View 1: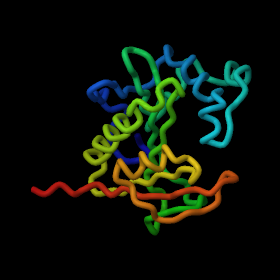
View 2: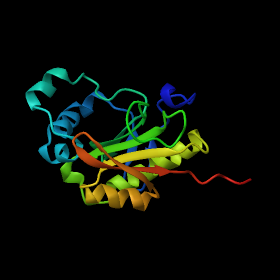
View 3: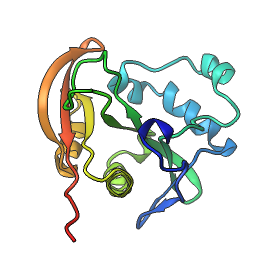
Length: 182
């Protein structure tokens, strides 16, 4: 993940009690299309995209880039967690030079309400702490997305500010890894 540091990407798959977080593969293409075409998912990310457009545009191996973790449950993709550098031109920053690492996630509606997002994001936070010691991580979500706000708080994110972006009020928060003593 060159954008976030010198660590080689992808890391070895991350394993939790129920999930495997891994790089994207060709077998994930249909799930990526379903995710981005879903009206339920689109409600929280500024809209869905037409399925026929996605069928033409999505590459054979979608999401194959540094910072994308496919969330795999029993051999099938149910969502993804992403880490990206936050563009300095966007509102919301906690460092003077901006370019903070930003956590994002999207799950297929059939996976909602089962704790998979918390489990997957916690694994990514653990990986991030080891890969980028002491670096803060930010998250932005729509204020209207109650489930995402509860998850952010559960994961240890703290509100920094609110602002308007993408036509909706956004909650911007930061997570500071606990320094390892030793």
